[in-house]
Image (tube, rainbow, N blue to C red; front, side, top):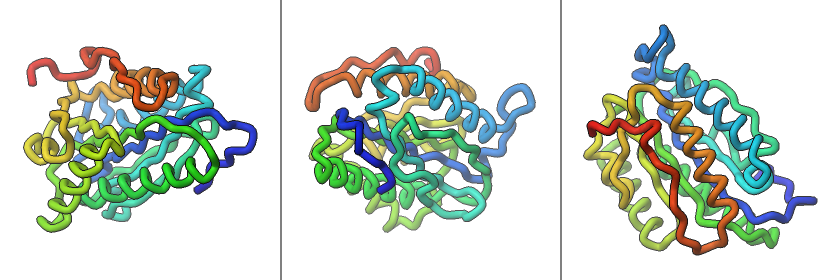
Length: 227
């Protein structure tokens, strides 16, 4: 782990982003930009919004897993990082969509960060996993089934909150297997609006106490209300 807890013993709210960087994310979005370019701008918006929040900047932690991309695999692009040290970086789209492998990597990261926080005597709220994809998972059946089993078990044991965001072209039936929450369809390429919502939600979570029930902001600014 790369987080240095010296000087900041605040409670943490970890969130791992599972981001589809497969070749289909090169599909044109709006104003001449591709989906991956819109996603990259959204991640920059997330950085700016979190850093402008007095609580989130010292309490929220982010990790990023890329699915696809130049390596055509699922890989950790950013290990756990406190928001004050987070600097957005661009993803490059290419390859297939090993989403199940990416999700399993994310679950491992969550268990690692909880162990690290406990070791350092830091309280934490339930970690989040946000999955964003525009395609069909290309994992083997066994890998996908293992991913869905691990996700359901983790949620049932209250180890993680899982949110699945479907960009046009995503397999909603497959995404529905990953969480007790139904997938939410993104309206076009409103990644900036999505990440502003995520920033507000993580800020609220970071102010809550472990185990508190929390009301999330409205999804209307970014969800496709026709789905």
